[in-house]
Length: 171
Length: 300
Image 1 (spheres, each protein chain N blue to C red):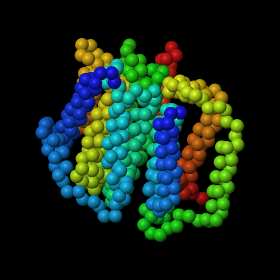
Image 2: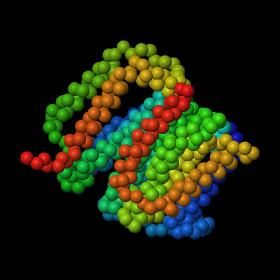
Image 3: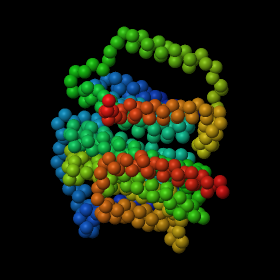
Image 4: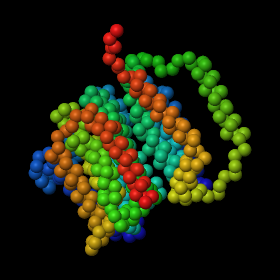
């Protein structure tokens, strides 16, 4: 990894942390969702800094739609979407803090204690990465992705079905 | 880009094309070709008083116009004008174009929310529904061109059309991409987010001066980029006899963009719910059929 790559990795990483923090510092649902979008884009930037072109571009593309839809749903369901009155977004603060710290320690331990394979000196070319990802998706990871995709589809259909208003049935 | 002179010519042609589109935009509304009008409009907007709506969201308000323009410009950068002239050759070019277009929607949503106005907010949320509905056929039509080229490099997609342009090879995909491009640039049959006469300007209603100028310039750039994308993915890109490659790209792009405005001049604005219904019920399945069609042709 060149020093320039390391610099960009650091800058995007700090940006991701900063925007992730901003998500919880606002009472407006849209500001919160767009802060999360910015954090996700910064993660995409980290992928790009690590020469993972496809993953970076995919992350940046998918998050635009997903976070916008999330903003819309939060608008629909929150009683104070604009954050105009003094709605409190946090609750059960002590248990939440405990769970957060516990999860953080766990993730850190996993990252430090896992015997990672040695880092590759040079990333494969972007075209090769596209090819390899395609092969991976169509062989070893196929079942995982197909299962996840089908589950999401079923959940979407179920969500739409429960939202439909059925006409009153005659007795 | 190998030759700096070609780069200069391409940039000049792109700028000239955007100016011509500004003229055509007025033609599609008023039916007159006023060649000096865009220049006067730029001066007018630069000198106009900046009016800030009360209680607007400063960060989003300032970000939206810039993000809009940047998204359109970034998409243009990966589309090649001739065999040796993509500004930025990306191995994931076709995907990158989509990523950039998605941020057009984010910018509109930001703009609609930031100004603290009902019409603007309605326009922003409308565009969210519209773009998500029409980005499905757009992405899937693009996927079919990528399947034929076996590469996401836009230049490779052009060379895959040497024998037969994609407009003939996959006409359903072309039709879907063309319509989705109109929806993405919110051109007249699909102009819901800004809907003149209904939402009083929608998302752009509260923007004045240079910010409005950025939005309007960004939209023209977006239309030019989408026309360029139609050219590259379906009309054989730079291929053509006698003239140099970039000249063919320019001519085809301008023709496609002019046809966008032509469609807008002669078609009425449709109903929003019908528009979404048609996309999900008909355009998305048709895009799947198109992928199947291309798959069968490739296997034959």
